Image (cartoon, rainbow, N blue to C red; front, side):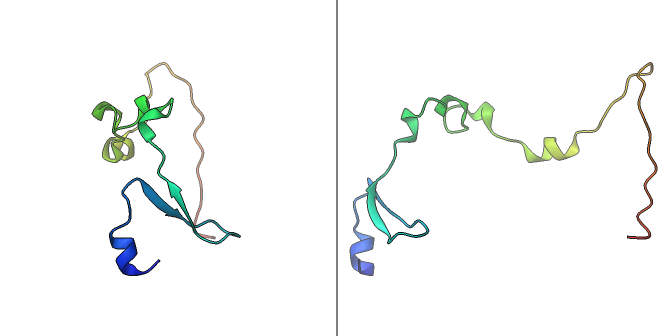
Length: 77
């Protein structure tokens, strides 16, 4: 396809390029029909992954909880 043809291509179509085969024209998949769509952020904003909250999570031990502590020396690496 030329650049002009790509610019006016049907919005319901896409070009797939997979290793080992030539690029081909295909219908787009309607993600809203997928059984797990309800778990996506597109279906419900509460499902949005919060990277800041994930990275700031700290381990909180209870006073009576037993754990192993290891010392790691990284100077020799």
